[in-house]
Image (cartoon, rainbow, N blue to C red; front, top):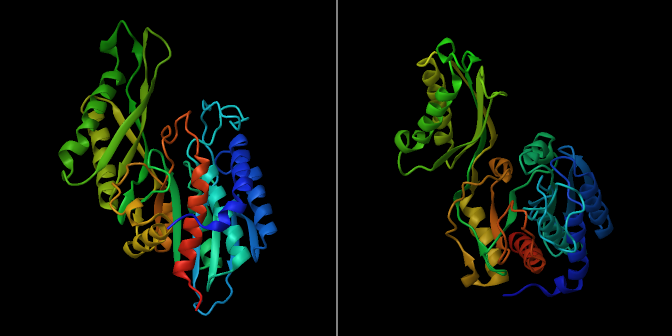
Length: 389
């Protein structure tokens, strides 16, 4: 019940690699340097196949075990992209790119999977095939979907697929997971209230969209409270308002943007339908036009029951039973690993990052002490799922 011994000889190089990624963050699909670094190392490790450009800038490495009597393939996924945030960590390895930083730990996720890939390619101590998946554009770009649409699971069919994400303020050496809906769907909404603009001194000659927008915002806050079963979870947050350019002109229209999060696809559909009626009818009642653009981004992330237990068993072997929780509360944050789980059964687990600022915070940094735990988790999972006879 400990970090595996093999990690010790690689930890210094892995830590420096992680910090190099942190110094050089890249956004969405524009992860060319990161992807090239990953591919170069996978080739140097002796992976049987390394393919770049899957889903635009994704990288896939294929590692065959000592035998393949099982005929099974397991996918392991890490994300590579950073965020458009100005870093405030003060670390010596802080971002050198203005306005960009690894504020979610994807630099650590990539490093941990690379460390595991090196050991798996060295030892080959498993029966089957491992697919190591390095994905771009998790932060709002649906890179997982792009890799799937580019034929990843057709070219390399997987029996199971697993992901891992760090969790700030969960102690290092602890893991947490649960089955079922674990993270919310992520949708973007754009509401437009179109009235009739005019002189601010003569509002009776206008259809002022601002008070209509205010009424709409208030009405949306009651959408989840009064139209959903109290046992269901949903969040509708309206976050921006744009209207007008002058202090004495009533604008023609108001645009409001926000996000919708749910933990069941049925609730997601219900919210979209109710929101559309609410926008249109609230505006019509006051002589304006209401328009809703509802953009479905990421589906609900649902951990397969068997995949959850398998992931937990691997974590328990590494960290001990008492350091693995199977009742992690669901989060209304989103994760595009959901697309992969909709194609292949599996699960995503959280690994403790220790005391730290929260994800997407300018003072956040991935804890390098976690690297060894994550590498050990990945290789243990492979060994358990595809043991040699």
